[in-house]
Image (tube, rainbow, N blue to C red):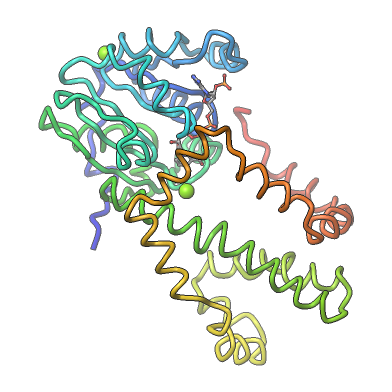
Amino acid sequence: SAPVYYDDDADVSTIETETVAVLGYGSQGHAHALNLNDSGIDVIVGLREDSDSWAEAEDAGLRVETPDVAAAAADRVVMLVPDTIQPAVYEAIKDGLEAGDTLQFAHGFNIHYGQIEPDEDVDVTMVAPKSPGHLVRRTYERGEGTPGLMAVYQDATGNAEAEALAYAKALGCTRAGVIGTTFQEEVETDLFGEQAVLCGGVTEMVKAGFETLVDAGYAPEMAYFECLNELKLIVDLMYEGGNMEMWNSVSDTAEYGGLTRGEEVINREGMEEILEDVQNGEFAREWINENQANRPSYKQYRAAEQSHQVEQVGGELRKLFAWDDEEEASEEVPADD
Ligand code: NDP
Ligand code: MG
Ligand code: MG
């Protein structure tokens, strides 16, 4: 099973003489830049000249340069622009990667599928919080952290792993635990999970359940509550205490019905095909081509999803829940944004 690293396994002083270029100031970028800076690391944020984020990063007390200037000045370049943009940004910054420098990612897609091919004298690593950036920042400010992943793809210096762990500590992730993995495992499990279970699987199950009830003549409002709204209550229980916490909390009737009938809706062969396409690179090829063609299918799928009846019904019903939003907003206003 996978190794897990905590604060005691990492030493921030390993990277304390480094200058770190954080490319991008979005979800991950702002959190990495601010946490590293607060941990005493010299940070330069890399942004396009016309970027709206430029002033925001400077107002937060950070130095900002264009990506090529930031990378040339840095010993560690952290790619935190969108994955589809990274190959182009890499072309603009690669001359700034000298022998012994590190190119670091938060997701392995472009390395694993060969869209970025760094020189052999550069370390290539991954430090990936398993959490959106605003939580990476907020938990750090509270003295806590979010769990993360760490991987080494190329170790030119012999120090790649120790430095990646030092970075993970400066980011706050070793406070919660950092799992050692590989680029291949991170990419393949990430793509499979979001396609088969988290994003693709769940939305298809919700729509299919909703349509089955509505087609049988039940009220769309009832179908929405049963098949979408209540999902959150179920998932919260699973998140807190696993499947058993959920089974223990629902009625015995729900438990018996679920345990005996759930498997009927799962297509395991379909799941295996999804995994195969991830492993053999078929999905990656399709997505890269889709982007090069300006995303024609993506736009169609998105429009169809937008016009699905579950969206229309949900849009109306969620207005009834406005009090819920206000309560959450007042509880969770982050200090930094
Ligand atoms: P975002 O979409 O939030 O990043 C946007 C940032 O990239 C902005 O600062 C934007 O600049 C900048 N940017 C966009 N295009 C360019 C360009 N052409 N040149 C320079 N900068 C550009 O990305 P995320 O933080 O979501 O993702 C970054 C990486 O982290 C990805 O590899 C992702 O897979 C990974 N990751 C993301 C997680 C998440 O929760 N979001 C979790 C774990 C990993 P501007 O401000 O000017 O718009
Ligand atoms: Mg450099
Ligand atoms: Mg993902």
